[in-house]
View 1 (cartoon, rainbow, N blue to C red):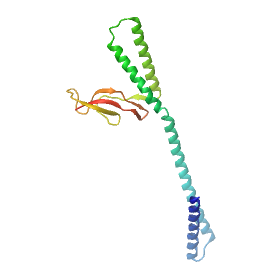
View 2: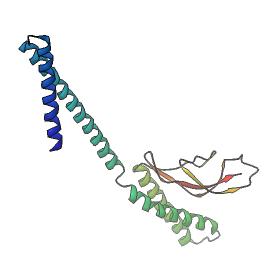
View 3: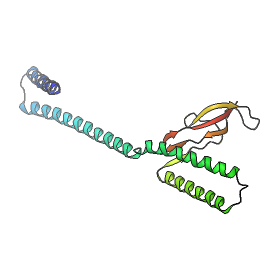
View 4: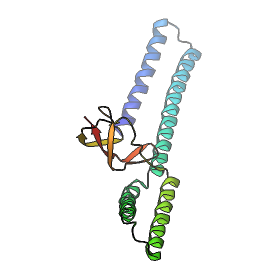
Length: 180
């Protein structure tokens, strides 16, 4: 309501300005007054239309982001399952002395399930964060520093927990150890 009153007041002020300019000139040509008023209304229309178009674009972008990142919380939850599979595979590799057929089939089944989960994550634009070389605070979280003759200061020595991104957002930073 206040917006309408403000616009009405602005319109009245503009009309008074046009009328006062016309009376200052002496003879007010009605055509000049009408053209000035038409130009003013055209300017208001163009501004309103531009605001509308900008709002429309902003809403479309917000909608696309909402759709793109709708599964973000689900993806974060599934990462713990990935961690469990990786731990299971590591434990099985350390226990490779068992030559039983059942054990071999179990390892193969876990590997297949793990690969299938990785494919599903990739299909949904969830990628593992690269943890080689220099530490990047945007995608890595340093949880400790270690002495290393093989690495320069600031380089990643060990990955404690893998990190993942969904499209261009970090779902979970990689937890790493860096060289002193």
